Length: 517
Image 1 (cartoon, rainbow, N blue to C red):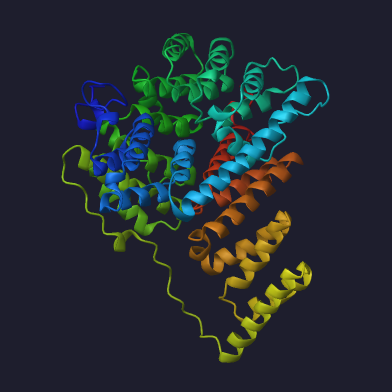
Image 2 (image 1 turned 90 degrees about the horizontal axis):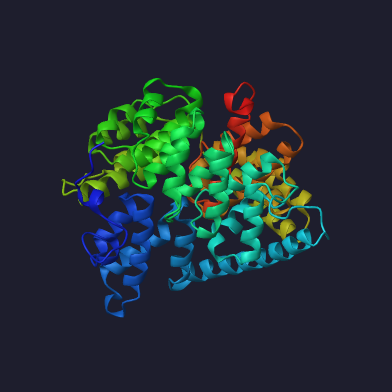
């Protein structure tokens, strides 16, 4: 593949000479890189944006207000740690909330450190990190670079299999949870896996190594790629090498997509994010409307990273015809990313008519509620709220059910039931209420951060519960169901863990070649 001669193709993350992110002063350009660049470029752009926002001379300008709005609204899971740090420096509600979340993380980290010391002192047989709920584990590891050495050494011991306790599946799960970690203290353990293991362990370790800046990584990845013969390993290694600027695996990734190998398709599309160019646009575009939601949304993300404007019309058409909220959400993000990339290339930036690609809920066709139904519905709802405040959950839910029965197209009482059970961690009872609420008014839930957080966590924790009971098919169905929704306003840690769990459950599906490897 020829080197990309455009602005983004020549843009380094640092350096005193040539094009580098750390030398950009223009805020609109920094914001465009933050939307359209590679993971390293986006990370560097966010750091540069934080530096520029500290310049008091820029305060109260339109550019700064737009920058703050971008930091507030950006939902890039790959930059979870960096975004949390940037938001903690913001004024107002967003800054206070981010600082509160950091305090929660510190308390979790302290508890985990104490449990790890007890584990290695022989006072406990339970490995602390794997015992955490998935979203808490993702929250803990999101800031792995801030964790003390004792915790990182424990993580490294599990990665290498030197703890003498954690089974293979848990090692794979832990490495998966480190997908976007950037801490160089993890490099020796991850390289030892790449050099000595095989199969899924190598693939997972390579994914993590691809995003870490360290001189030891590229030679280890290249050496393993040259001697590997397992397809899954080679695709993952090709992707990681691509993140380090080495495109030797592009031909193999292209072949996997051209041959449409089902077991490698998702991995190959992910790899093309790091290896692809405009030459690969049509190859990726054929998967945009794939019947499987996970593959379609990944193809959209890959097309966004390639950034070829020729795919804009096709994305818009799919957005306006699909009934899958997750696919629409991915397309909306992709349209913004491609427009930013075109701007940085000096091309005419795409003008997106959001009235054409916005969510357009179907008009209400049922009979209007009578005045009596509205009045008595609100009465039952408020009585339910009162019983909820008094701790009488069953009585409250009975009132919510009564309010819902009076007005069949009213989602508020159903949301009240779901939230009541979710707060009590009765996720099996919360799910039916959330499902009914989604049928009535999905947009209300998807656009409310509090509601979408509770709903997504209910699906995640219920999937974890049934998975522990050995009912993997049920867990797979729950995770797949919630991932069809627009989860952009859910916490990044919950979205990450749902995607990670979906990936793991897919590979454990009966008949999957990976489960036999």
